[in-house]
Image 1 (spheres, one colour):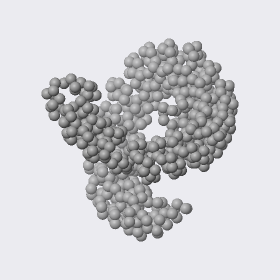
Image 2: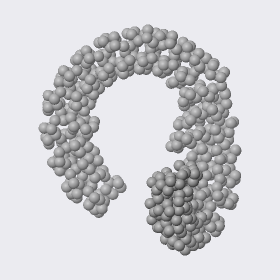
Image 3: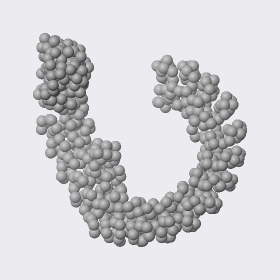
Image 4: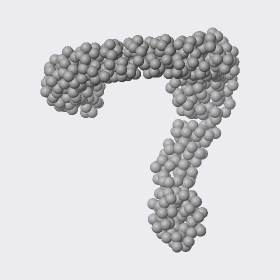
Length: 618
């Protein structure tokens, strides 16, 4: 570490003369080289290790090694500022331009005027670091192309362009089109130029911040900025922050495309009289979406109006209410029907208030999770909760978890509620049958005895074919059950018995009702090698062709049927077909779409390009 350099001089001479220790020391901190004996500063391996760890260690190398180009380049690769310590007899510019070519732009600082005035090297430098423009010759700082190139890499490079360019309107317009924030560096006359400011706003709407005060009062300018980013309202004049149309536009625009860290609410910039106006509250704020909470920017009366009118964007908006309002039971009851999860944010006294909790669970059964123990054991509250959301059964109290009517209501609302049914009631055939009739996926949570029940399994797979996965093995060989499962999910063939997988009718049913190409992985090989079967398969799911034997990928009829269903299937055809010009043209004509996967030898063929162009024009 860096403390080695200071401490090494106090070491015993035997240690300081220990080459292995010296080599190890500089590998940890290259600047330790400063404290080593002179003969180590002339040791190529030790010096190389030192500059590789810290390029500035070149300062302490011997005069001989400061001429060694390999050591010099190693040091500069680590820290370009080490160029200060290169032996003066070395042709520093040769090393310098090699570094520039390796994208070390700021080395331009150390080169002589010959290179600083050479467009080739200056361009290479500023492509890596736009600020390297400051080291270019005055002549090149006045070069429009080079100046704009530097600005495109770093807008701050504008500070280093010539005074002539800084006063050239055409150049300024080009510069702000590249980086609108450059407006902040301009003279007042350009900040007052409407065309230049508009050009800047199109690139960066928030550049309104740097426009002249007169233009911040200009409706056209401000509207243009807000259309690009609603937060530009922050920089509008105070009068325009009272403008209904401008403020409503800012509030209505979606800024969810911005990073979360800057997804601010433009409402904070709207004048208080406007944002607390009831009409504006109802017609503008209430209709906005994708906003962080608006409540924090409203006064107390408007906050209450906002919530009462069902404009709560997030239930934690309640946190922004004053204490008196948050503790007003009548107010809470008036808004709770519009708050899916607001019980979570209420005071504990409301979580123990029967009337409030009952209202909350009617709105969203899962609110039961926030109620107190005595209320989760309340029959009416529990029943209303599961009747609103079946999975709220998870939060029902122990005294009611075995109540049959509550459990039946839960599974009737949501099949997955069966997951939370007690083991004793899962044995109840009526409850399980009710659950699988609601949704077949409930079969997964049924006890084994019901997975052997033919009526229950048939009901489950009729709802959800994939439920066959959880049926007893004996029923996976039941043809009627298998056909019912395949009717809505062909891929369910994966879980059938081997006997049924080899049944022609079963395979046809699966292929005709498949949803994914991977179904072919569950079809016996004898069917995959059957052309008629695979023709049916690709007609239903074109991309299946990717998993078929090569002989079918060379089959023109089969490939043609595949791309009729899915144009992307062509990429899986055999290369011989993908480079067959007449076949490709036929595919384009039949599919009436641009196909993908044409062999590279045909991508520039004029007839094919014309055929594709004709499609696009139509």
